[in-house]
Length: 333
Image (cartoon, rainbow, N blue to C red; front, side, top):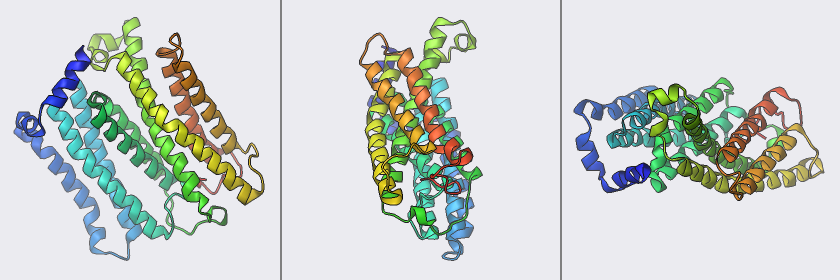
């Protein structure tokens, strides 16, 4: 009932009315982050076209700054249930996403090819997909905004990891010079972004579920009580996985076709292929378990969390620490 009330309030109050409720000082916060973003990119704009790579990197940082600001706004919305804070978060995150698009497009110009050839570019695109999925989910289900702080924390963490793996623009290695790069890697990246979003709601489910059965600091602070209902969190997790799983399946199949073209075999149990298959199996188990009423809830949330860990191993651990055919000097293949 409480969550239905939240949805009704969000749907029934206009943005203008919410803005009037926002204290005057808070209305300046988006301008602060817009100014910070402009300060990060203005020098490179003036020196175009010679510094497209630098422009891309500064746009990346500007987007990150906006996401951090949006993260705090969404955490404030979660803590105080002030709808104006939700709109404040949107006002900061949406321009951040546009800056992020600019960072990726300008990186493509600097590369001279499709910007998904290394772990920095992959992490950047993955974070953008996760942000986009989150924003779309909040439009369809406004109650999802209560997880915005956690979602943006994950996005900022992905971008931080990506920057730690930064590589200067360079030509594609021969193994990646194929149109299958766009088909296979884009599919895997898009599905990963959607499935990362499902992890956010699964994690919140486990937090709320645990707080209901264990006396802990969560009960004392009453923070867990502010989360959407367990049923809502389960539904959001399921819908994200229902979208991401078929895309992951398609991307894995496209990778097998690319492997046959590049190496003369469809599947060779390379570490990357093995972990992609493990990830597929985990989410297939989730979808099957979700059809069983006895498993739906805590168990399926745990399976979704295992799936997220498997994705991180597939995308990062295999590329960085395990030698295989997909280890293109930290490439994204």
